Amino acid sequence: MSDSINPKIKAIAADDCADFTPRMFAVNHSAGEKLDARVAQWLDPIEYKSVGCWYLDKNAKTELHFHDFDEYWLWIKGRTELTLRLPDGRADTFEIGPGWIVYCVRGVEHGHTPAEDWGCYQFNSVVAAEARGGHLHKNI
Image 1 (cartoon, rainbow, N blue to C red):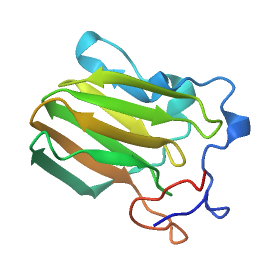
Image 2 (cartoon, one colour):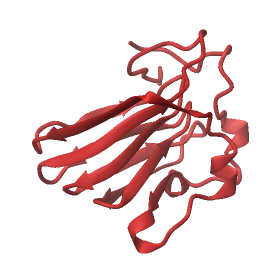
Image 3 (cartoon, helix red, strand yellow):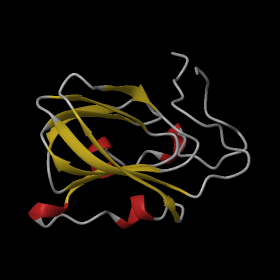
Image 4 (tube, rainbow, N blue to C red):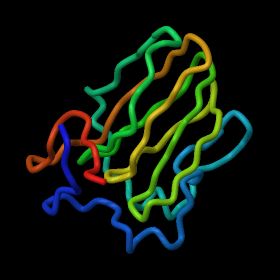
């Protein structure tokens, strides 16, 4: 699916990004990092029934996309090159591995290219009735 930000969903917009860097949305908890409160305030409550565990080979990459809801990746196996792009266009790519959580706030694009076989717990926030499902892509 290809689309722009859903006006019915309160997602981070370009004007909201001044105090953010893409790296703030990925936290290495195993190294003692903590989620920045400015990011945390954007997160909706977790839908606990959404929790799933993925174990995939290194050829299973995820293209850059976003959602109308928050998505979380709790990395448990393997290393990957994570790309995060904010709505204002600033992006960063860096390696993550076990112990990291990626906090994919609504409207923040995210994707990854694995360096090795990988695994993560994936879950999302409660999905609003107006939210579109699946991977959404910016019309650039």
